[in-house]
Image (tube, rainbow, N blue to C red; front, side, top):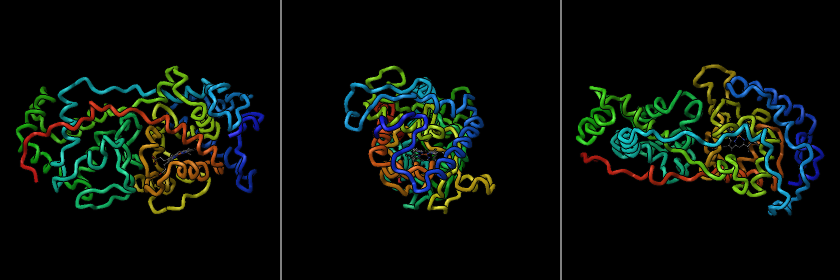
Length: 382
Ligand code: HEC
């Protein structure tokens, strides 16, 4: 991207535009206002997004596409923009027995009817907590309707699932276990299976010592959720936010500026670069696949049609394919579609590459020790 072309980055518009650029500009302003409303509703800092966007550097230094590889002359991001993002802070629980129990249950195929599917089969922790298939595959190879989101950093999202139907990780964990197409168990069947295993009776008693009925379904989902709260992946972006300005390349920084100035940041914001609000997919230009109505299926409110949770973009470079339907294989295409359908803007390939570079900086370090596959208690396994 050639920022030198732009007299004022707060009024940034890409060079390639859709034919009716005025309409697009108006539409963009309209959704920005909507974004501000969503922002306030989401309980974020009240300071207006408009203010933030117009706080972008007034006269950015001349950085030509050629010089973006050059550390010289690179301007860091405006601190007021940066305040919209936060480094990851949540830490794993210090209750070692509870975390250990949760880890075993995460890897435990006895939680499924066939004894073959575990949380880790759909959300493999060595692959950034998700599989490369478009839609999730459950027992007997049955295919779900949506792409499996990553379990990494999920604890910080304001709600769980693409349609936000679970309030927290505990509620989320019960969903797939009891879903006939995913793990296909009832709560009673889960308890029966686990009570039959001496190792689990002991592990539950140790994790929940104050509780006489330690092996309950609430404790199964509670232990899994506690383990998941430690699935945090800080990376280069966090180091940058904490003050290490060498953690991002100049191209990454250009991408971050574009992300902010275009308005992606209004929806994908905060510590998780998303995961904090619901938004319509296709704000400006309708999304082609209207089959899945998103939140409308939960709320039964027609106004929620095509509304989904804004996903976190943490580790997004590692979690293809994209979108609730897993329909897009490449991150470049996902960025292009987002700009077009959410903002009514057509990006050129260099702009897309800048944003993709920055999204790469959101790839964090997997906590290898924490996710090490545990030895599961001896049991009769199918
Ligand atoms: C109006 C809110 C909004 C804006 C603005 C927005 N997004 Fe999104 N984004 C969403 C929603 C909602 C989804 C989830 C869509 C779905 O249901 O699949 C999403 C999904 C994505 C995904 C796919 C993530 C995944 O894991 O599947 C990427 C990548 C992405 N956005 C990047 C961007 C970029 C880059 C921009 C700016 C060009 C942007 N978004 C602007 C709301 C927004």
